[in-house]
Length: 498
Image (cartoon, rainbow, N blue to C red; front, side, top):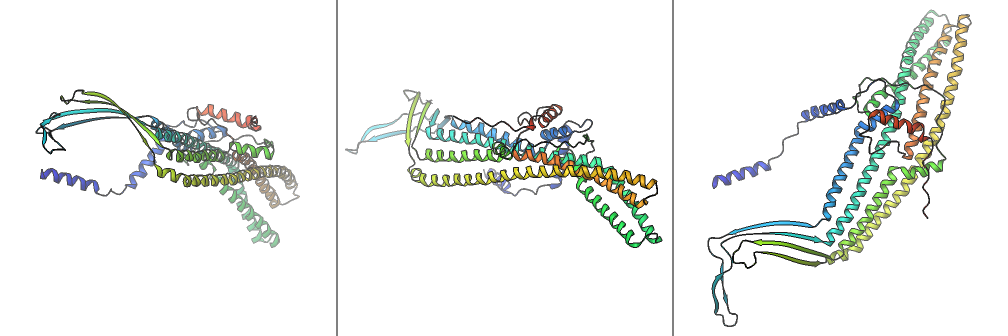
């Protein structure tokens, strides 16, 4: 016995001992391997990646949206668990009893104080009894129904949050893709420009040392070359990380090597899908934040129902099946039914204060809705203005590139005719390469602004339920259809209710 007590005490002390420190080295190795295993299980890139291929891969494999998908699954499981709260309670029990003598009793007269009966027993020394009780509480049922409705709204909030994340992902993909395209198009030109600038700088330094030209002219020329070098470095810095960012959005290792489809450049700028007022109304219909706030408002109103139900009386009914092995019993099996009315009067007194608190929370949400409406309206107007300004800048960049191309042609002809110096020719060549790069960047900015315009309205261009099961090529085709056809006009307005 003493040994058993000692072992039990030792076990309790062992349970109370602190946990060991986490092995961060093992966790780092495991997380790195898990990520690489997951990426390895995904569809491999076959050939060049188009814009819609990149968007499809992001919708299917991006880890941020998988977090939101797991949140939806969690809410669904919680909803299933909450639904079980409305079912009656069914409890089974069994009891066994044994004693070393009979459980007897005697009776005494309350009038005379004398023993009225000789000692007797009505139970066996050993007995087994069992019962199966079905109970149902009206108050618990009402509360469970309200909580279930709230859980449905919580799931819908998770869906809207996933929509928001996926819209942001698609906007980021379009931004990173067009910048990566600019990188691929201009990387060779930037390298050539660096070589030309370095060679021209060496020639200018030789001219300065040999005093062939005036110092002011040579120094001014060197200043221009330094300015060109600085702009080249700035452009390289802005564009250098685009392919790594795009790879991460597609759930690829950032240093993954892949090739992009380089679309033909054209001066066709996408048109605005509607007026500013129509775009604002569309944003208020489709933005995830507005829908989430509406669900949150409904959840808060459900708390009023919960407070009212708790202030009401409740009726609980119990239906039981019983059995006992005691041979002294005349009926060893029986059915019983009971009911009980209960009322927590303190909840009734607490209800007015609870109601005022919930109404105050609802008013706060209404004020947030107005602030959110203003924020969405501002975002749409800013996105619209940004798109229009960048479209104008693209036209300016295109005209500047055309003019510079003509100037370069004239400079080349003049240099052949010995009418201008080599330094003047190099200056025009540098300006031409820079004009092409600026045009590529301007075209990329317009495409990014177009994506931001649709993201500001919260418009869906994907099937949120099926995007995990559709093959990449089918999903890419569906996205291309949306962005080239269906996105040209806004969704129709809902018919007013009569």
